View (spheres, rainbow, N blue to C red):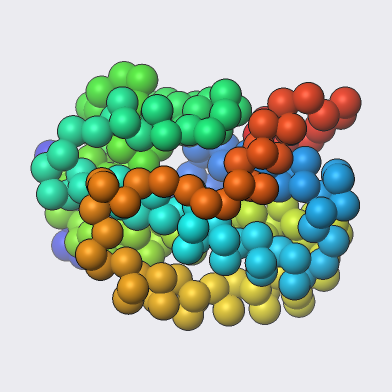
Length: 211
């Protein structure tokens, strides 16, 4: 097992834009929302991301990752939680990429056909990374990636994009402060428009992103 003096530095590598899991290729349904003029400005983007964090995918990801840190083996439950075919593709494809890098460069073998958050959380445990550190980096990275999608394709200004990143530093902490008691019994989503447009993305006439 590789040893590191400060495991937190690992997170700066894993969540760097140079870490090749291809997250930039996925919009999590945002492309379809932008294409259908449902998201047109930075206020719309903030509303979307708030819902994703407090009521949608990221809320579930938090619960899944915390549960894995507590010893649960739930990869099949994670995959079953996908609201569409493309959402499951997003989970598995990035998981495949992360697992390959872990094997080839980090001397860590992870199970096949596992989601990104399963692989990421297992790697975090392996390298003794605190859950609080891992989840903050994960949530901020996910949100920043989607903000970048909006900067490019609404389009939005770089200033608006960075202002949203600043806002979500505190939004993420607010979410974590109120989510400590969530368990697997709380898995679910009430962010229906995000789920519906993830499905609609599958049938766009032309598209840039895989999801």
